[in-house]
Amino acid sequence: MENLGKQFKLIFNNLYKLYRVVGLFKFKCFLVKTCHRIILEKKLEHKIKNYTNNSSFQVQNVIDYGAGLPRYKSLLPNADWNYFDKYPKNNEVKYASTDFIPFDKTDLLICIEVLEYLNHEETKSLMKEISRLIKVNGFAILTTPFLFPIKHNEITRIANPNILKNFLDEKYSLQFYSFGNFFSIMHDAIHQFICRNKFRFFRLFLVFFILPLKIFAMISEKFYFLNLPSGYLITIKSKN
Image (cartoon, rainbow, N blue to C red; front, top):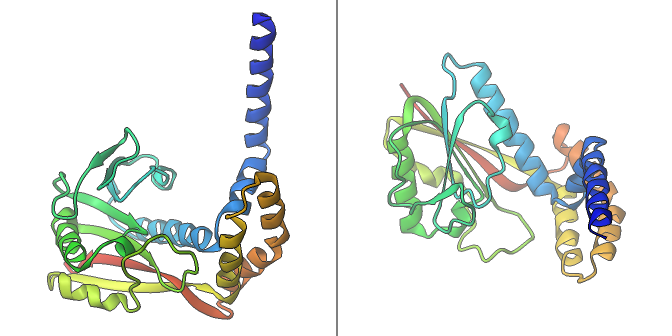
């Protein structure tokens, strides 16, 4: 019986490896994610590649503030990643408040979908920490939702990210870019109701049923058609 159990476990592990290798795992991730998250991650990847490819320095270390569960290391696999969160949920993630992140200087700081959970004072203190942490040639990337139809107990939605300039020193520049479109917002509005269903198989069936909306959203985002901001990507750099 024990040998039978080991054989079954071995077969299951091999099937799971095959499942990941042939791309079904990636397809399932694509299927169950919101359009907002998929587009956000593509924009994040593009922005990091665009900046590092045109920069005279290499990103040696990265701070991911509000990391929750670390997920972006593949974007810069050779860098030293440092994860911080006010509510750590992973052994790799260390505690840090917006008032103080226990680190000296970093080439890159990312803060993904965190600003909406901060009040005015916390946002102000985080901006000051970002100013302190990024090196002269370094940069920070932040994202935050706007016309995002799924509620996650957010405190605020930032309609105009330019207001964050008020919390930055003059030696730093801030730019922001909207992302999202009519189809992505429609998909995610339906998606939130699907996720409330208790039956996993039925949820998978329904998210597959609205897959055409997700495909239209990706096409629309690529060709800048029917754009509506579901969120913003914000970059902060030194002017020097």
